[in-house]
Amino acid sequence: MSFNHSQFDATLRFLSRTVSQGQIGKFDHLITTIKHAQVNAAFNSNNTIDALSAFKSKFWGQYYCAKHCLNTISKQGSITLTSGIASQKGYNGFSTTAAINGAIESLVKTLAIELEPIRVNAVSPSFIERFPNDLKRLNFIKGVEPKLTKLVSLDDISEIYLALIENLNKTGEIIYGDIT
Image 1 (tube, rainbow, N blue to C red):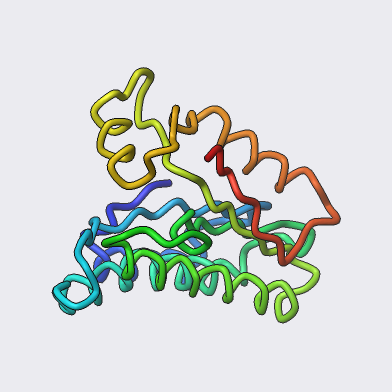
Image 2 (image 1 turned 45 degrees about the horizontal axis):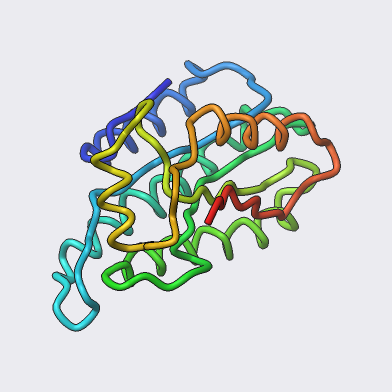
């Protein structure tokens, strides 16, 4: 199932209604990969409305997905959220993204304790290649991270998500998919 983050309120109503009415059956694993609209501006000049909107979609979207799945996810299952590299490394113009990703990583550590035995983890990918040979994105990212020589492939990041699902001993972990 996939949802458009730009329709946050409608998505939340749909999720709440379908779960409460039992329309989503039991499942083992939840993976969320919400990407907010990019807010690339220096902290002193960024638009706070845009920052709030980005936080609402990426942080609160994952928060609500995790919360609303608790009655249907298997107790032996897992929840895997997605943060991002800006939580660990400072980049000019990425203060909003850094705050959002840091909040997600803090949430994971607490939920791993509170929701046990359900495992809760996060994947923090580096800069991801949207499609093979994504030179436009690579050149943009090189302006942010000059040492970057390639983007992380979707296949590589997918392997990290699968490894977290399969590893029954991992919870409260943030796995970094950083190639820089």
